[in-house]
Each structure stands twice: as C-alpha cells, then as structure tokens.
Length: 409
Image (cartoon, rainbow, N blue to C red):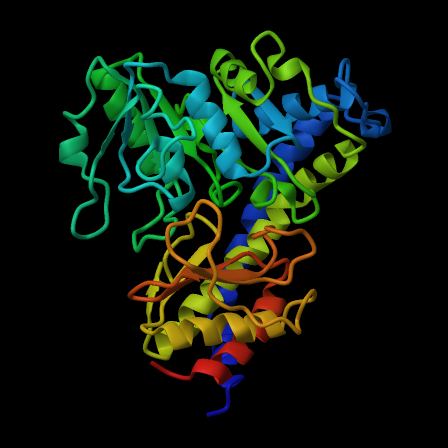
C-alpha cells in the first residue's frame, strides 16, 4: 500500500472543510483585535514585575482582554497555574464548602480529577475528605448527556455542577456550546444558585462562543493548550462571574490576596502574543483532526468524532484495538516530532492517572498538547487520542508514518 495515498486523498476531499475553518479564524481574530484595541494594549504592557507581583499593568490588561474575548465578567490568567487540572482544582476548592454537593453531568470526569474529587487516593485533602459529596450522571448508552435524568438531579444541596466539555479519555462526543447552554438552562431551572462550572480544556476558539458567553458561571483551562497559541510556556486561566473568579483565585494564592498577587516574570508579551495566535493554531489542529478522522476511518478503524462532523474540541479519538498498535502509533508520531524524534515512547505511570499511559509528542513546551501529540491509556479497547498540530501539513506527514507503522484495521 502506498502509505501517502490515504492522506493525500483526505486532503483533497476535506478542502471545503478547511476553507470553512479558515473563515472561522477571521471571526475569532476580529474579537481578539477588538479587545486589544479597546483596552489600548501596547508595548508597555510587555514589561513584567517580580516578587509579590503588585501593580502589574500587563497582567491587569491580560485579565481584562481575556474576559472580554470569552464573554465573562472577569478573568485570571496566570503562569502560576501548573496545568489545567490545577486551575480546575482552584475553582472547585474555591467555591465548594463542607456539606456541599458536586454534580458531574457529562459522565465520569477526566482521570486527573479523580484524586481531586476523592474517587481514588486518600490523605491528600480531596474534596471528599473535606466533606464535599459527589454525584455523577451516567451518559446514555449512545454516549450523550442524559437530559431526562439531568432535569431532576439538581437539589438545594447541589452547590456546583461540573461540565467537562472535552471527551477526555472516554468514547463520547465532546460537548457543543449549544449543549452546554442547554445544561446551564436546565440546572438553573432547578436551582438558580447552583454554580455551573465548565472544564474548557481543548475547547477554546473551536466554536463561535465560549461557555461563559452562554451562561456558564465559571470556567477554567490551560495555557499550554488552545489559548496559549503554542508559545506560552506554562499557566492556566479562570474566567466567569467576578466573585467566583476571585474566590477561585484565593485558592491559587491566599484569602486576602486573590487575583492581586503573582509575578508575571516577563511573560506578558508571550501571553498576549499567544492569545493573538491561538485562533490560527486551533484551526490548524482542527484540520489535522479532520484529516486523521478521515484517514483512519477509511482504513477500517472506529473514529470519534466522524471526519465530517463539526469539531467541538481539538481531540481526535481512534480505536486501535491492541496495545501493540497503540505503541506503534505513538512511536511513529514521535519519530516525526521536531523535538526528541529519537525517543521511543513506552507505557509508564503518570501522576494523576490510574492506568499506565503511552505518550508521544516532541513539543517545544513540555505538555503542550496544542503542538502535535498523541497519547492513550494502556487499557482496552486501546484508544489513541490525537491532539494539536501547529500546521495541518505536519499532521499529514506524521499520519503517513503512522499508516505505514500500523496499517489497516
């Protein structure tokens, strides 16, 4: 088999899809440029401060433009967030108190949140250990939100509903903005005081709006994913209702300090430039997703989402069916990474994950899944999750190598 042929065929068929994605970039970029112009972003905002981080004009303007772009009252964009999971944990610990209930409405949460909630592990101060109860709505057999169950699941004790936008390591459709808006509406009908929180990782700039623009009270994500534009070296964000953002920021720093602390250490220029580049980088990743979905479906593999389906995040799941193929997939992709192409990905334990993982991605920033990467837990049915790509042509080259390595289903 000519291993480049399936990829080239997909490129031709998907040309109209790629053109539509490019038009969406223009929409997002206009919103970003409007915010930068209205807040008079200039070179003086590039300078950062050290120490406590008091009176940082750049940090202040970044928070303001980010909030405007995502349709939120306030935002906290900080390099002190270690990851998206850290930002999410700050949101949970900042809002929830002993006796409160946390309700997950889109099935089981991502692996790294299990120990935060208290579903596994002990002795580290999980929400469960602090007296926060947890409930979870299973997805339907088709992998969709159980709307019937959701309509009667929120009580007066339900302080927060958590909505995971991305599929994570599960075989379900990631949530659309319209579905998130419907979830918020159903929750508020039952208890207007319940906080609707969205794990927005992998979803920024994929659709025309963000969750906070359609009623979500609070959301969090990683700057090493979509909104960092592949150049921000670390960090995360919180955005939403001003009082909730500040409460969550107090878990990042301390009560009384909240969002007023945190040195930016001369990273403001990268934060602003990364946000400016983000729509284009997300668009390239989306094109790569479509490409991978088409190629592997044609080779007989199950893929999620389908190649012609609208994107809801920048993750393409491919069911490979064997541990050997999962490792071969990651090995081939690693060989076409710009950094560490000589490395051989092997299964290993990762902090926060229950199963051993196989991970590939020679990225310039460690953990930057906006750059091309692939990973998956070493468990049946051996699904690989392909993410990112600074240009779809890089994805295409890597896919040719993967097809040669694993062949058809």
